[in-house]
Figure 1 (spheres, one colour):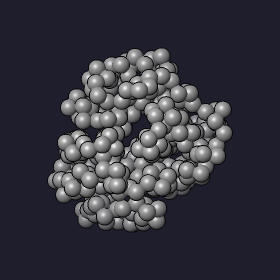
Figure 2 (cartoon, one colour):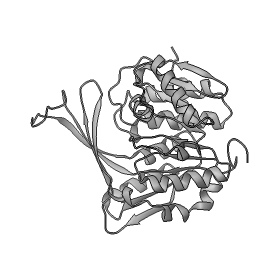
Figure 3 (cartoon, one colour):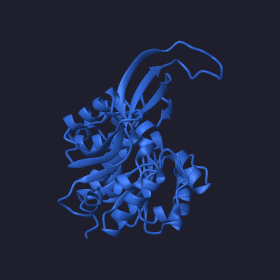
Length: 312
């Protein structure tokens, strides 16, 4: 199997669906304080669905394995992905549990606080993954996060790894990850906070990200590590490139989904044959565009938008 799995296969995402319920505030409230917000809105989200959406908007063939409730939110989230061409045939519908929901508070600087009720996402177990083992084995790449149970994530990783399919792990939200899982991955892409907790090395900037990346590679020597640093860009520690890829200066209005955007664009370019630095620059440009817009899936850029965006 090649470094890019089955070259004619789709990208497979194993991950979460959440309906995002968003409210904007001038600042985050202190404990016990009630403040007035504005611009309440509902938007399809969940890290798995966001990443599937990102790949679809970039013209990739992509399918998702996940679970939603048999409810209005589940209907809406599936219809949204289907409208973009994402294959949702491996998404289970649950009769006794609600679809995942995320409550998101955005402050005036574009930073966010998020509380997630996992709902149906918590029911995605190894048996659900094994039903789609052949789909995973025939994929071009497998993309996973940690908003669904770790046992199912590990099952998917092992299936892909044994078949020679490259695995990209986005360890978000943070959960302690077994070394065995890390060693199944071609790419591990945490943000500053996740990298800090995975390694015990506080990440604040490119220099501290380099220390954390070395620590991660000691656990998983074959993995290529990309630590996203928000406006500071990304630190890359890989086989053919190690170094800092700077971020682009933009006025952020909503950072929700920026990491998912980066992953979709980075992996797209890597699968096309780009080197790590170029793929990371492409991902960073996509994320920079996304944070200038509101919403998770609604902010994801097309390929034409990324290619037209000026690189400073």
